Length: 130
Length: 130
Image 1 (cartoon, each protein chain N blue to C red):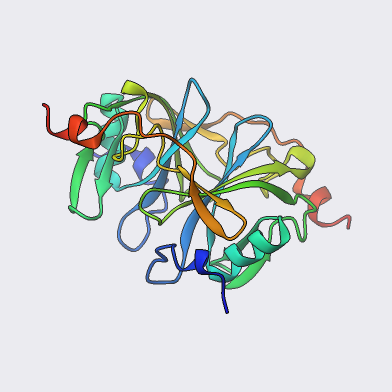
Image 2 (cartoon, chains in turn red, cyan):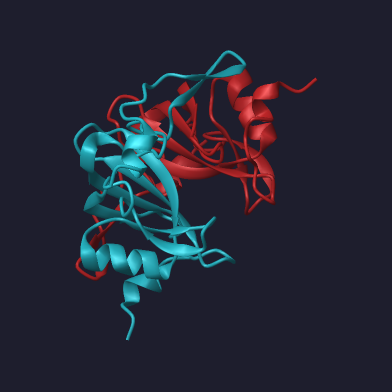
């Protein structure tokens, strides 16, 4: 029998909800990804963040190719039951596939998006040297 | 001519993207709401958070009925250009329509969602006594 906490979530028409990951140490908002029932169940059961890759249409254990896993401290649900917040320990201090700490590295400056965050590790070194 | 920063955003099939609001003072993740082009343009132009209400199908200036406006310190875009992060000053210290600081007031405890955050103000007093 699937755990009933999954039934409390209001999954959208595609069976997904947005999931925000926040760094437990720095408080930074790292990523916004998507979860389906399987991803949330796997996250709860394993203690590491799993998402649903909309592009690959596959369950995705964050860090499975980069090593940048997210160990989950808290799983939270919002008032409308349609958004998840994960408070995580981010392995390597890098959450973004571009090699930055976080995915939200562009800031609106006047009417232009400016990149504010440095690349900490070349993506080639993240994904090829393994 | 509409500002080009709006064209950089990858709006979904409904013309929306998820927008996370984080408290500038506490670092708490307060809400996840949705924006369309009009909402992001209004947020940029006014300096206070505007969202798109999916239930009311209307532009919504956060706090227009509650008084709990969000003054925007930063507007950020993620690596895939399909999620927004607002860093805000939350008026009244209450972001949730339930009268709590944040919408993410339920935490997964084992296999059950538990309410962890107190109601700071009765919603009746937020919405009726104005």
